[in-house]
Each structure stands twice: as C-alpha cells, then as structure tokens.
Image 1 (cartoon, rainbow, N blue to C red):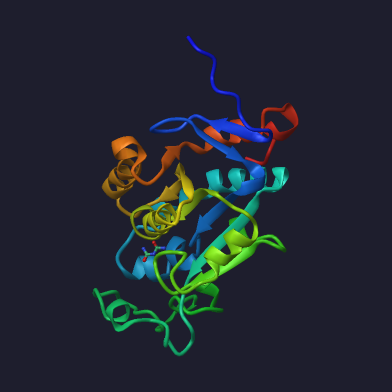
Image 2: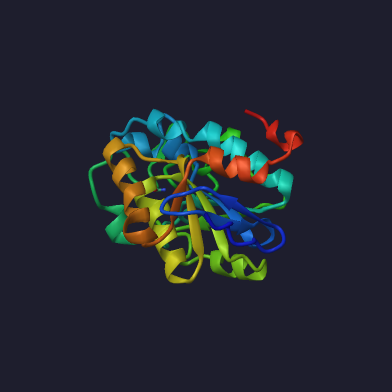
Length: 240
Ligand code: C5J
C-alpha cells in the first residue's frame, strides 16, 4: 500500500465521506448556522410551525465540543442568525406569508417578535454564545451569502474551507453549503452537528452532500474533526 500524500505544513486529515477532508486551521472557518432560540427552544418560530425542537437540540453538545476545540486551536469562528429588520423591509412576501404557522415572522411571541433582529428569540442559544471577536452574521435569507457580508468576512481572512454545523440541515445548512461550493469553498458538514426537525430529511440531506463523489461537500462526525484537531492529550480534554 502506498503511503498517504504528505500534507502541507499545518494541515490535518479528517476521515470523512466520500473521502478524507484535509484542512489547515489558518485557512478554515467553523461556521455555526442559526443555532437560535427561535429554532431550538419552545415558543420560537420552529415550534410555531408545529415542529419538535428537541430534534435540533441534539446538535448542541457536539457543537459545544467543536466550538471549544476550534477556539483552542485558533480557528476562525463565524455564527449566523436568520432574522429581519424590525420593519420587516428585508423579508420578502414569499417568506412572510408562506405556510400556516401559529405565529408569523414579526408577530409577538413568548421570546419577543418572531425572527426579528435584536429580539431574545432571535439570539443564539446560551450554550453556543459567540465569544468576543467572533463574527456574527445576520442574514435575511436561508443562505449565509445572500445580502450579507459573509463572503467578504471569509475573503478578508483568507478562508478557503468551511466546517459547517447548525440548523436546519436541509434548509439553511444546505443553502449555505451549496452557495459556498459554487463560490469555490470546500465544505465539511458535521453529521451530528447539524439537525433537522425531520429524521428523514436529516438522513437524506447528509447523503445528498456526499453523493456522486461529494457533489457539494464532505460529511464527517464531530469526533473525527475533534480527533484531527486534538492529537495531543491536552486538547483531547476539551469540555464535554
Ligand atoms: C429555516 C433554517 N428552516 N435556519 N431556517 O427556516 O434552517
């Protein structure tokens, strides 16, 4: 068997599907998508749509571990929040009026106005609170690139690869990863760090990413990334 190709200085290998994903901490960003109370906690937008929010909350412990590891090695961390201006001028009618939630975007709910910037419910869950200096992107759409400075933030830091977690797998995670792939970024999606209200969408959503040789990305469990980032006993003890 031939030896694996040598890695550039500073790069690590992450066992993934459909094949190994290599990353260099200096040029990789951890992107945590929309881990907001409005999606993950009772009383928020997700629940008003009739969903069981506990399905999304399974992502929190793995994301806490990945976030701690990324911070420990100095990886760029970017959080996104879906939400709208208080006058909803950035919310297209197609989004505002679709479906039949018990509360619509902008309506007052138990955690403030649904998906409105600055409201408590639009904030990120306490377990994953952004640290000072970490970029937080407020986005009106499903994808992180649309109508935001996300692309500029990545370019300014020389980022070429993204490690992606958050919710929901088939909506904002997929849209962002597809947008990123089209722009030339290589994306690794964390299988247990992304969540859906629908188990079938979770399964198929992950399969779609790696189909046909990785048509728009790679998928790996968070443990694979953590092992790659923490080969030393000191870092293996990141919070659980
Ligand atoms: C949705 C999201 N599902 N963050 N938003 O409306 O995936």
